[in-house]
Amino acid sequence: MTFPLIDETHDPCLESWVESARNHPDFPVQNLPYGIFSHGNGRRRLGTAIGNFILDLSAIADYLPIDQDVLRGISLNELFSLSANDRTVLRGALSKLLCDAGNKDAISVHLYPSDACELHLPATIGDYTDFYVGIHHATNIGRLFRPENPLLPNYKYVPIGYHGRASSIRPSGLPVRRPTGQQKSSDADAPVFGPSTRLDYELELGVWIGRGNEPGEIIPISEAQDHIAGFCLLNDWSARDFQAWEYVPLGPFLAKNFHSTISPWVITAEALAPFRMAQPVRPADDPQPLPYLWDEEDQAKGALAIELEVYLTSAAMREAGLEPQRLSSGPAANMYWTAQQMVTHHASNGCNLSPGDLLGTGTISAPTSDGFGSLIELSKGGKEMIQLPTGEQRAFLKDGDEVRFKAVARAEGFVPIGFGECRAIIEPAR
Ligand code: MN
Image (cartoon, rainbow, N blue to C red; front, side, top):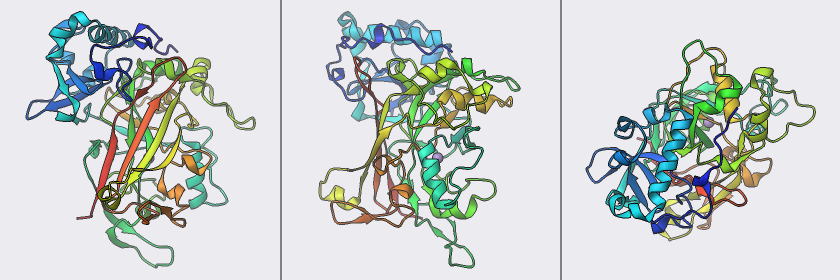
C-alpha cells in the first residue's frame, strides 16, 4: 500500500500570495481542495479554495500539467479517475502557482470571493454506500435497540454497510425538509403516518472513490488507497422513529434516504498525507481481520488525525444573536475499520466502484458523551434533554434548528487544514 507522500506542498513555511490564505482555519495553501462552484448566474466550474477565495481552475487550465478537459468539466468525476501520480503532479503545480508571486498578475484575475459564490455537489454520485464503522455509535445504538446484545457477532469481522440513496445527497446550506413517514410507538397497536418527531443528525466522514474497478474484479487491501480520491463531511440525517419501525429485516430505508448533507469541498488524499496515523489497536480478545482486510501499512497509517465537532443553533438562539452550542467533539479515528478496509470489503465480491461514488463511514462517536455523534446517543434515546442557552430543550431536532459540522486535520509540525462548511437548517414538514 502506498499512501500519498509528504512533499513540498505540505511545507509549513509555504505562504501564498493570496494573503487571506495565511493562517486560514480551513483553506491555507497546504490544503488545495477541489470543488464545483458558480459565480452569479455563471456556469458551474471546477475550482480550488484558497483563503477567502475560489480559484477558477477551468480558466487557468493552460498553466496546469493535466488534460484540459478534466479541468473544464462541470464535475470532478474525471479528476477523481486520474492516477495518484497525476493528482500529485496537479497539486504540486497548483501549489507553485499560488506561492510564486510572479504568477500573481496572471492568476489573481481568476479568483472569486468565496462568499459571492455558490458551491455545488462536487461529483455526479453514481452510488452511495453507508457503512457503520463507528464502533462506539454501533454499541450505543445497539444498546438502545437490543440492550442485552448491542454488537451483533458479525460486527468485528465485517465492515457493516448498506446501499443508500445518491439522489438525495445535497451540498451544505440547502435546508432539510422534515420527512413524513410511518412510526409506531411501543404502546400502540398500529403505526401512524406523519412528520418525524425524532429527527436526528449523524456525524460521518464521506469517502470519495477515485479510480474504480471493473465488474468482477476485486480491490486488494494493498491497493485500496489508490482508489480513494478524498474526503468530506457527511450528515446522514435520520428519522429515528421511522428507523425503529422499518429496519427489520432489511435495514435502513426511508429513515435515511430523504436528505444527506455533504461539505462540498473535496479534501484530497494528497492533502491529508501529513495527518495519517495508526489505526487504533483492537482490544486483545477481538478477532483479527480476515487476511483480505489485513495490511501492515494500512494498520500503521490507515487512520486520519481529524478532529470533528457538532454545533447546534435554534431559531431563537440565532434571533438572540447567541453563539452556536457545541454538542460534541471527538477524533475521526474512532472507527473500527479504515476507509481502505471499507473499499476492499465493498469490492471483495466483484462489485464495481466508480469514480465519484461516495462511501459514508457511519456515525463517528466516542466512548464518552462529549464525543457522541448523534442526538439519539446524547439524549439516551430521547430520555435526557439537552439544555440550550435560551432555556429551550432538545432530545431531537425541532424546525428551525441548524446543525453544523466542523473538521480540522492536525499534526505536530504541519499547518492544520479544515473541511469547510457542512450545515443545514430544518424546515417544517410539508
Ligand atoms: Mn449513517
